[in-house]
Structure formats: C-alpha cells, structure tokens
Amino acid sequence: MLGQLVKNLKIEGIDTRGNAFGRFPGGTILVDKAVPGDIVDVQALRLTKGPEAFYKGRILEIVQP
Image (cartoon, rainbow, N blue to C red; front, side, top):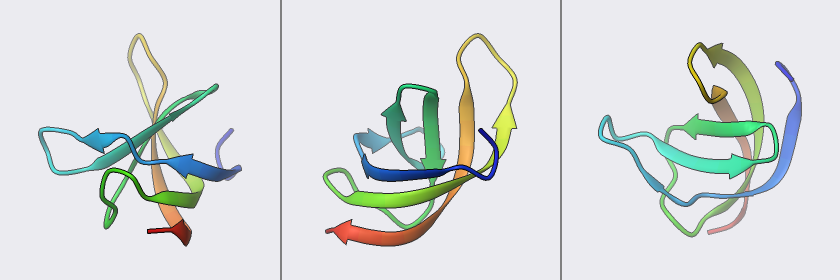
C-alpha cells in the first residue's frame, strides 16, 4: 500500500491534531492542506501502527475543492 495512489478520496473531517482525513478500503489516510468535502488524489507515504491502518499521505491533486 505504501506509495500507492488513492484516487478520488473524499476528505471526511479534521482530527484533533489538525490533519484532514479520508477513509478508503485499506484504512484511513491523514493529509495536510485539505478541508472536509474536498475530493483529492493522494499518495500514501507512511503507515502508523495500531488496530486500524492509518496512513500519512501527500495530496497530488485536488480534484474537486
């Protein structure tokens, strides 16, 4: 999954640290510089450990603001 492109990820909310997040079948991706409602293409860069897969991602393109 690391390095994988996730297309058309819908940003669902903001966590307590200010990271925007969206969910996809492989887990949840946290990104910077997005707001709820954005549709973005993201590259998954880093995986955090825990009961659910959380990835840190980088926005490649804002498909729909």
